[in-house]
Every structure is written in C-alpha cells, then in structure tokens.
Image 1 (cartoon, rainbow, N blue to C red):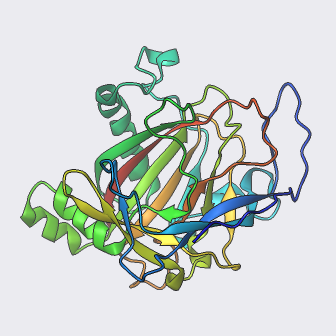
Image 2: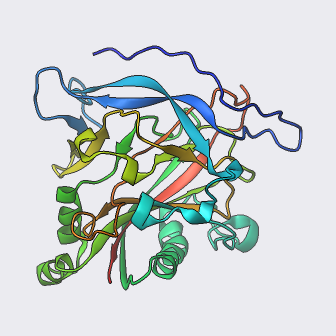
Length: 309
C-alpha cells in the first residue's frame, strides 16, 4: 500500500534568532505509521538483507500528528512523565560523560570499545539511580545515529517499539550469565529500557525524537514484527497503527546533559494495576519549521535489561 501524502503546518509559531535556531512549541508534523502486509502474512523486517531479499513485507502511511513540546508546556512539566505511567522519562541536568573528549580526552562516541568502557558504566549507574527498586542492569548493545548520508545509521523516521513480550524474554535468556540465572530473573520484574541522548555540541535542531505516552496507546494498535538478523537470530519489534487518541510528545532542543528513558517492555505491565506504561512508541520526525541548513542530529541509544524490584 502506498503512503499518504500530507501537508504539514505548525500549531504554534516560533521566531528563531542567531542565539536560538531551534524550533519550539507544539507542532503538526508527519509521522509514519505501520500498515500490515496486504496478503495477511507474518510481517517481517530483514536487517542488512543481501541483494534480491526484500527489506520488509509491510508498508507505512504518513499521518499529520500534533506533537506536544514538553519544553514549553504549561500543563505537564518534564518531571511529571514516568516509566510506570507513560513508558518514558526525561532526566535533566546530568554531568558530562567521561566519553566526551572535550572534558576528559575520550573518543567522543566514535569508538565502540571506548563507549563500552566509559559510557556503559555511567548508563548502568543512571538506571539504578532513577528506576526505583532496580537492582541489576545488563546492557546488551548500543547504536550511534548521525544524519550524515555517509553514516551507517541515521534517525529512524518510522513509528515503532523496539521489543515485544516475546523478544524481551528472549533477550533475558540470551544475555544472562547462565540458563539458571535467566530463569530466576524471568520470575521477577524485568524491563528493557533504552537510554537516548544527543551527541551534538549544541541543542538538537533537526530530526528530534517523538514518543507517545504508553497509556494512550491501545494494545490492539501494536503489531509484532519479526526482526531477522544476518546471523539467523530472529527477534521481534512492533509496528504501531495510528489512532487519534494517542498523545505524542517531544523535548525541543535537547542537549547533552539530558536523557530520555524509553521503556520498550515491562513484565509488570499486564499484572500490576499501578503500571500503565510498559511499551513506548517512538520515532524521529522532520519538523517543518527547521532550517534547511540545520545541523544534523547525532545521538546514541543504549539498550539495557533492568531487573527488580
């Protein structure tokens, strides 16, 4: 099915100056939502497929959505969003990372080895400090995204969720130190949380990250998609069908001292009344107000299993 062409407008205007060229305020912008395979087959997404093998068997439709700027909101401050209620959380005022060359001679997020040595321990500490009751963290990978055409990974402009219940349990079994430890961990609370931060020296100007409050997204609008890797590993991500009740947010002009925690799965989501989060749809989006020569967005997301209480 072909995508729908839309015209975008803004719901609030912002004058940019030489000091601040970042678009601010709520905006009506195009988001790309999942459309299932037309033949009713199991949806799949191939990672780095060889020539002749399709990347996916489903499509997307483009829908204009109002995305609320948490930065300028007078009704909901950043601190009001939590993992248990919304499946995302914003952290601000964090110290520089040891990985940032400007402060410590690190690699500035260009070396995977250095990132694992310097940044992973910081992410582990951050998760333990900010997720109440957590007692164990296993980081299993990270992705650097840069807007440059030569970059291996760019911002993903498709609404998605990184994990499903099936793939989360599979991750625990894959990354625990032993089968016995995995089964013990699966009996308690376990989550998958992505820690997202920009790498730009200044505030993010282009392709900001949007995320929907989990409690506004109906389970029926979330569709498991097989995620097939070249080594034969098959996980699952989820496509998201559009629904008008969904509430979308972003944080304009994110800086290096800010993080977004994106909860992809929470094993308590279906069993605890107080947990309304559990899975957060998210996507990069193109703000129609951004300058044509805006600095390309650079970011890192670190994916972690978080256990407890």
